[in-house]
Image (cartoon, rainbow, N blue to C red; front, side, top):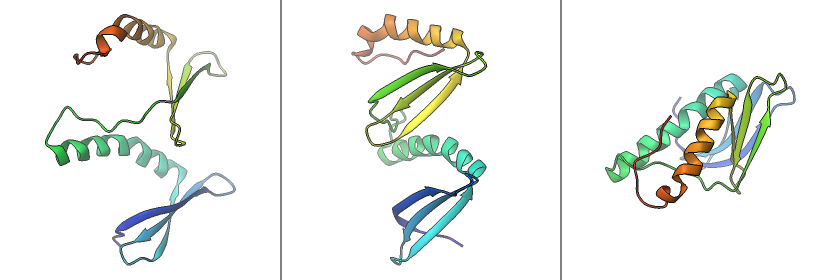
Length: 129
């Protein structure tokens, strides 16, 4: 079955946390409830940023474009076992993403941000690790 989604109306998580439910309006104006496992929702979430990047690049025929979100806040914490650093970025519109990494990656990122902030205000090649 193909669903031509026109609007996202609701998002919820089942009581046990195993299923994500997305309420949609289809191309005929009918309400549709899409249910996916939490594991499949994770796979979708991991795929969507690349798809959004590909879509904007195709739309404007410009491979330098990316779909970006305004960063409003961030949080850094240590994982409960102490082996990883968790960095969480949040937008004002409720989007939040967390990354886990080894402490040396955070040090590398911190140095790149500190050294490159002035250069980043001008158009420059991306700093990569």
